[in-house]
Image (cartoon, rainbow, N blue to C red):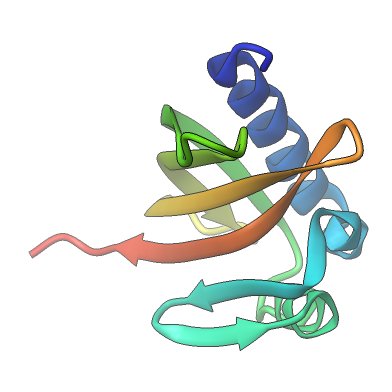
Length: 125
């Protein structure tokens, strides 16, 4: 198995640059059984996930990753858990939002797909 930190870094760079540019292009990262939990709302299937991501109520978005942690998630399958925190700039808002996102990546024909994706905005007290 390739170095999981390198795989995680490459995945995160691809995911957020694609999300920020054209969210519909993320469809190849999900499968029929993939699940997204967006702010507590569960969504299943690639089509439903992409529908959710492409209908979010903002037109411009930019992610700035601040932390990235990766761990192997199974002793028998080279799957990876990736945890990300960062800042999210939407439209022309001067105030970035803090977010956290966790991905469970499963190997598939020399690449990886997202089996699980959990996204939360992090609000201060």
